[in-house]
Amino acid sequence: MLFVKILIILLATKIAGELSIKLGQPAVLGKLVIGIVIGPAVFGWIEDSEMIEQISEIGVILLMFIAGLETDIKSLNQNRNSSFAVAVGGIIFPLLGGYFAGLGFGLSHSHAFFLGLLLSATSVSISAQTLKELGQLKSRESTTILGAAVLDDILVVVALAVMMSLLTTGDVSLGMVFLKKLIFFVSVGLVGWKVVPWMMRKFSSWRVSESIVSTALVICFFFSYLAESLGVAAIIGAFAAGIAISQTPFKQSVEQKIEPIAYAFFVPVFFVSIGLSVSFDGVGSQLWFIIVLTIIATITKLFGAGLGARITGFNNRSSLGIGAGMVSRGEVALIIAAIGLESQLLKQEYFTAIVTVVILTTLITPPLLKRIFSDKQNLSERSHT
Image 1 (tube, helix red, strand yellow):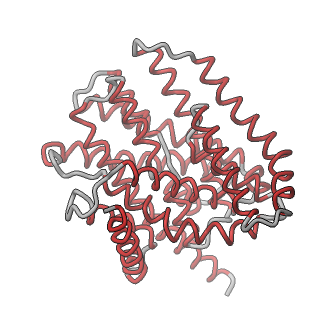
Image 2: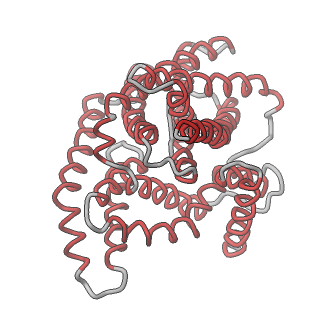
């Protein structure tokens, strides 16, 4: 039956993506929506399974690996202050918004604080794909968004560790949390600087078929594994691997051969898998909770991250675009929600509603980016005529 599921996913995502483009939206929006349509929430043709989840994980890793390949490291370094400001603003405002919203819905202080922390998470895999479709992945705004996402992941995970050490009975060592993050970034820095170029040169001379792209994938999955082992999201490791390989002469060759592998099979499964977790059971009783939280989640990221961009030199429209790029919570928020459920910082009755909010922020992001960056491009073209 797996073959039938894959057949339906591939066909449905291509049709939905094409329809989305015809309606003036990014293809990724149609691919996300079709996951809900063919999943348990509507038709039930595809159900989530361990195999779908594993293929999906490979898909998002390859997506962020490609984003890393196309990122200009000089631009990333030049925009480090903006990325930091965007990350901090994009955490503080959702944290406060989620906390006070939680209190308003009758949650305890600890549960309300966890809700705020959950809303502080950012996953830019969807934003990266949308920006790529819009031809903006190499722009200064995009580079700032990607840099901010890396910092956001670190800050939120550290804050989560602090919270769990204070509010749960689990033994969470803050020193160990910081040490693991330090080990990861030092390791990928050294390996990316010295080992990756050597590996790419060494294996490129081998006569076995596709040695270059295979070596690139080995590096990508090793960095992802290292990241996950040390408490950093696997997609950050994949992004770092892409950046490392982008500094070698093999960047173009790897990019040209990785994209067909990713977009023909793995990435469509990732897009659909997001919709498979949607369920409308019990949603009616928590409709206001979902609506209010979705509004807060969207506005606080737009304003908080956008403010960080504005005070570091971006104009209003670019700041709004950067804020929009940080709106999607994606798989990072889902992981935090699962941790909260396990540690009893998130009640079971709110889990489905939280998943729905995460999905909605993910669906909101592509049209927001399309509107802002299309208008920005049109204004730029007019100013040159």
